[in-house]
Length: 155
Image (tube, rainbow, N blue to C red):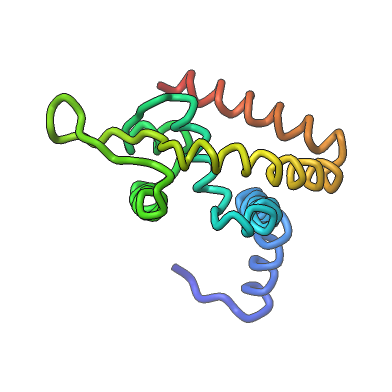
C-alpha cells in the first residue's frame, strides 16, 4: 500500500462521498426510516418492528430465519426486535414441531396494534411519497423489482 499525501486522500474521500451509491442509499434509508419512526412513535413501535409485524401477519406463523431472509435483516436485529415485541405482547414465540426452532405469530394485541399502525403508516407513506415525488416512488419500485430479479438469477 502506497502512502498518499493529504490532497490525494482528500480527493479520494470527496469522490467516494459524492458518488458512492451505498452511501447515498444508506442516507436515503435513514431519512425515510426516520419519517416512519417519528410517525409510529406514539404507538411505541419502530418501522423495522412494524415490518416484522406485517410480515408475520401475512405469514400467520414464521421463523426468525424466514423473517431475516424475507426482510433482509441481520440475525441480531431480528432477535432484539422479536424480544422487544414479545415483551410488549405483540407477538408470541412458540416452538416448532422439532421442539428446537422458534415459531413467531401475532397476538390479538399485535393485531390491534397493526390496525393502529396502518393509520400512522398511511400518513408517513403520504409524506414520503410527496418528498420523493411520483418519479422517485416509481424508481424505487422499479429498482427493487430489478434487484430482486437479478438476485434471484444468481441463486
